[in-house]
Length: 471
Figure 1 (cartoon, one colour):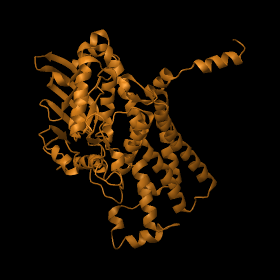
Figure 2: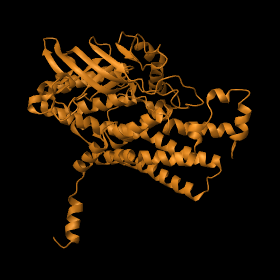
Figure 3: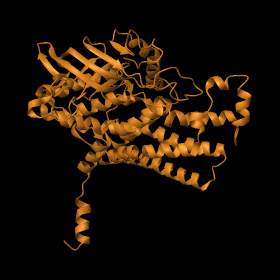
């Protein structure tokens, strides 16, 4: 099949999927004014493939079929492939105004994990599904995080068994599953959803050790989309968030039948942990790749607003900019190093170095709030006391604003830069980014755990013992 264009993609979402938003059933995600923002964000991935300036980066020739496919679907076989993937994700995020489209990025993270971990018949099913997605140029979401209920209890110990997605029946046609997954990004505007285990499973959790894929329009599947970062927005006050909204859902499976050819894991508890962690290896690499436009925006907006305010050469401002540059370039350097240190895993598939990619994510997450505060310190109180769009467009009010809000540059330039900083640090869009920094793609504690697991300390320990005169 040919690569989809933007209109192909929009039309493909009119398939009877069951979506709820703000308490209403939504017939067409293209028609709802708020959900449409998420659709148009995803359109960017499809536009890249048809953009002459970026086609070489966004499209590759499939080594198996020799047909053109989205570069997101290129299975990484080398460190160069990992670097190319990171840069494509960064490009898509830059076009999305610090929010990535995520309709091919996350799905391929999951596909690569399935192709690396599985064996035998399960692997053949995963390969067939990969071909279906790559050849069809499909948008694929991933449902991994169970709602979990009482987190002190294992899945099989929960009073309500449905708080972890589980198998409730098995027929000649396939398995029947029930339960819910949370935080499913880009689900309402995807074509397919891959379900992965959320954690390692014990021997008593067989019914919860399950992985499969279903179309979003599957009977019994319902998506309850979060309203966060919704509402009417204008380009003047909300320069980024007026055009960037991620459709996050509570994804509910109400006795959904999954055909056997789409079942990848069914009761094999020993696969649950490795599959979950392998997905995370790719997904955190995707995460730090899509953080790069945001950290650059922090540096650029802080430097710009300081110059506009006339304080660009002040010592305290230069100190803050040095801290921001160090933060941004540390995340970038670690992201690139995760690719350069990449390894070749099972079935010849490359993966980013787990130690370095977790260091990148940890560095981003633990210093994020300090970085946002530094940007705000460079800007000033107009971040929250400045005029709105209606004031700026008023013939009576605008001359007053132009007179009194002028600084080293005209008022409009200064106010627009202020509004950018407000959007990414002080309004709900900034709050969204702040929560993502801490919790998305795994918590800070999970990153620390993976750093400890991944670090080979034998050289350091041997040197310390030699220096101490023990050996």
